[in-house]
Structures are given as C-alpha cells and as structure tokens.
Image 1 (cartoon, rainbow, N blue to C red):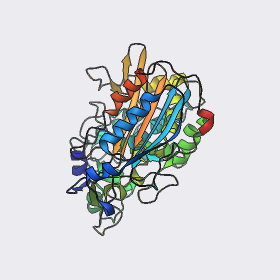
Image 2: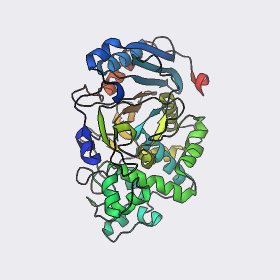
Image 3: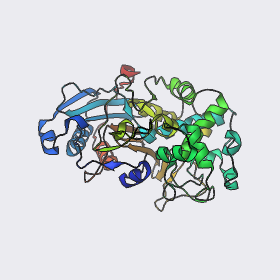
Length: 420
C-alpha cells in the first residue's frame, strides 16, 4: 500500500519483473513506450467551474509524461465541489474515464476505516484504550507484548509490526498457506493466526512503523463490535450520511460496473489457487479482498473529497471531539518537520492551521487525498503507478499545491448537486 516501494513489494509478494514496462498496455498487446505515446489522444469528461485551468493542465502533463491511461481529479473549496473530471490518455477508443468511474484507492481506505472506528468511540461502543488481543481473541503466547496493542496504537501505526524488519504479511499468501498447511487463497483469519504466532518487531508504542496488518485488525474490530460486515458498517455510518453511494469494496478478479482497468509491467504467481499460474500483478498476484480495511475500497475522486469534508465538522458522522482525536499527536513518531500520523491521516501543523493527507499505492494504482488549512481539498486517482525508471508519481502532491496556488480568483458556484 502507501509507502511500499517496488523493491519492498517484490520481497513481500515474490513478484518477478517483466523484461519491459508495458507502458499502460495489457499483457496481450505489448507496445513500446514510444509507439504507445505517439498513438494516444486525450479525452476529458466532467465539469469544472471557471478559472481552474491550472488543474487540467497539471493532470494532463503529469499523465502524459508517465503514459497513464486513466486519471481522475476532484477539487473542493470550503465545502463546494468546483471541479470533477475524468482524464483519458490512450489509443483505446473504447476506454473513457468519467468523473463517476471507480478506481481502486489502495491506502486511502485507511482514513475510512479510522473514521468508522472513531464513530464507534463517539457512540460509546468502543474505547481507544481497548486492547486488540482481547477484542479479537488473539493468542499472546508468542509475544505477551501483544496485550499492549490498543485500538489507538493500531490507528497510529504504533502496534509493533514493522515491514522493514518482517515482510508485510498482506503479501505473504504462499508462505502463510505453506506454514499453516492450508490451500490458497488464505483468509484474513489465516493471516491473523500466522502473525500472532510470531513476536512483534517492536514493543507497542515504541516507534512508528506503517502497518497494513494493523488496519486489517481494525476492520475485524469493527465487525466484532457492530456484529456487521466491515463494508456494511462503513457504508451505513460513514458514507451514507454524506450521500456517498458509489464507494464499495473492490474485488481482485471481478470488475465493478464503471471500474477502470489497471496497468502494470509486472507479473506474479496467483494467490487464488495452487496452480502456480503467472498473472498480471494487479489481477491476482495479491488478494484485494483480504485488504478491505487497509486498502480494498473503490471510489471516485469526488467521493473522497466529500468524505474528507467530515473532518471540516458540521456533519452527523463525527463531532468536534472525535475530529480532535483524529489529529492529536501520537505518543511517538513525530518527524523533524513536525508531521506525524494521527488516526488515519498524516498531519502537519502549518501557519494558519493544519494540512492532512494520505496516499495509496499498489501495482496499477496511485492515489492521493489532501485537506489543506485554507479550506481546499482535492483527490487525484491513477490506474498505474511508478515502475522501473518511470518518473515519480509522488510529484503529483507538490504539483497540485502549485495548481491551487495559481488560481487567481476562485469561483463561487457548487457542482455538488450534479453528482450527489
């Protein structure tokens, strides 16, 4: 997910690099990057209010430099949707990205999970001091320190699992199956049993270490406390009050209606059976269903910016006390520049307020969601990520800040009723 490098992913998932990057083409129609670029043309769908051309030009130049087939952008200012676009840069006449097209959002799923947890805390059904092992019945015999993993420490990536020390278990399907003597695909329960049989990498609360597994546990805690499926509760308690109906959990091998295709130059061994079949990385080299609460959601960019509005206050989802908890400093893990990971958000105090954000990354997916101190919010989604020697995708962060700063006069209209 977010912050997982190609090298880390290869170690975790056992992927084999293809000899060439496919430049946004499916494995069945490999082209050279130069020819693919020469054949491509632009289609831009959706709406934008006047004066926001800097955003269009930024997305188009970013995608063109990287040969990204599908992109999407939404921009909100002070609660008003001012831009919602789908961008297509391809030679495939049958592929057009709409502002309503669904994308895998990878780790942008974590803010949604954190919001659901904070809602349960707000409603008195869960405490941040509650212990994960107790709630979920996890064995602590391999490491008694597991008893000290609280809900808050899971939210803030302070649980003690460190993928820089021990490979991320969310990409260790074959090893988990072999160790437990089960057939692929492995289940979330299998993953939890496997991880609980090993010692933590650090004492809980000792240091920040980004953990997809910790957010998998949060999803299971939501289910335990509510008696509902994770997706059902999030849609009911977090999304429905904001009239967000498009968001849903994705599936690895089954496309949702309106979902974009995903492109990667890498392949891996399927984790859905024991056949050893090589598959395109986004379509079976890892299990999206198991990633539900840390990386499994599908969304549009405008769904995400509308979701982000929960943290502006004034919605029935979270009150001011819960929002304050989300952005509070953790017990450790504050960077030299003052940034830290709160509850589902990266946080940085700046002159005038705070900036909060999250990114997401999987083979075939790169996403970013930003809330800025001045009432601006945006989300950008792409169906491809950096591979090999391609330019950085993280550059989109500073580029969108520059696009926002280039707007001379912000429009006063609101496109929200067009899409919600």
